[in-house]
Length: 319
Image 1 (cartoon, one colour):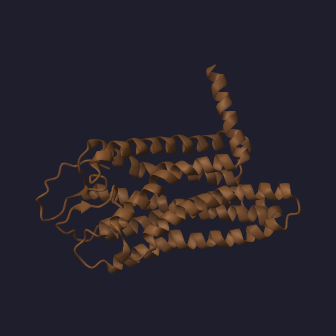
Image 2 (tube, rainbow, N blue to C red):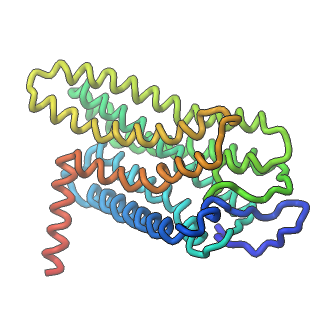
Image 3 (cartoon, rainbow, N blue to C red):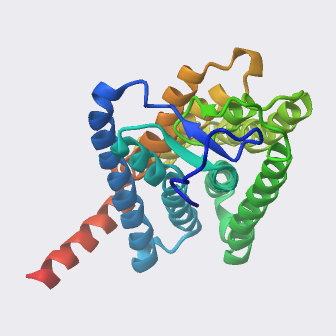
């Protein structure tokens, strides 16, 4: 993807688009840049640490941590689709342009990775449900072949939905308005630049949003209804507390991710506000990828101990 394209701006046919997300706040652009850079680096470090720890620590070679490692990799890709270009635009101090091809590429990978991320969170809820509600059959149901197929399925679903939606949107004619009221090529912001009826495209966006947001979230809620019922039947308070702690971190991540994304993509297009759009987008593109590894490492004793052991080995090897 080309971060900056030298495009003449007097073409009738639009060849490039202009970001104006943060250009209206020149006096605090440096502060925004530093904050975004810090969040992006923390996201890279935190999610990389989780993924590497799960891969190298044999005690974490279980389906739950396999899914967690894949989630960490997706979070790295997710934030990397948006953050580098946004940081370049912020540090330049002026309005930045992107080619239509670059915009389409960014949108494709954003929907692809984001959709796979949301579906994987639903798979993780199903994994918790099987382990807690059907512990004797857990290893039979959640074998490694099934786990690999579930992860691959989330990626294939995200890829197919993203490919169709991106092609559908970028076949539209764009008007003389070239300015995106956003800091990346988000779907609602791009659709506002077209000069034709987008009812079909809005319907397609709604279907994709329902597929990767509403349906997985309903499945997660259903899983946790059975999980809570099973936990309440456990007599030992210690076991009950430990069992709930393995689920609470996942539930916290789910509420953050689905809450922000649903606010943008499951609301009527007529009520879309560019200002609200990019403010909420900051949460799920910069903040959530940072919080995920923190939430899992703080709430999960096994992962916390594995991270401590890995850090200890690193310090000993350097000493």
